[in-house]
Image 1 (cartoon, rainbow, N blue to C red):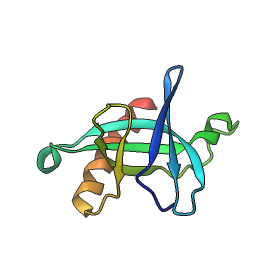
Image 2 (cartoon, rainbow, N blue to C red):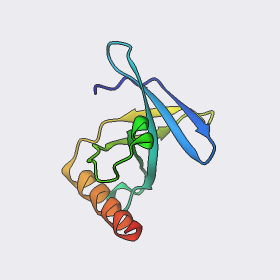
Image 3 (cartoon, rainbow, N blue to C red):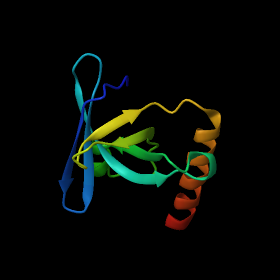
Image 4 (cartoon, one colour):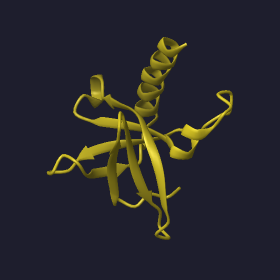
Length: 107
């Protein structure tokens, strides 16, 4: 999904959701799986991992889900920000390492 910089966060109970708008104006609701504070060379950056909100209703926990990862820049209001594509292999490696540690704890 191509990403426009417009997004809105929603708080539904304990879960947080974000609406992404593609280049055609189509909206899709995603749940925020986790936020990551960058480490080492990326210590001044934050990242967010998202998955489709409709997966919340899925009966089969074995179904594969494509996660989306973006760099997150918080807006001045603190409730809206900007999502940027991750462009370096080093950032992807760091995000994958943090996610794998999270997934191992959940098992």
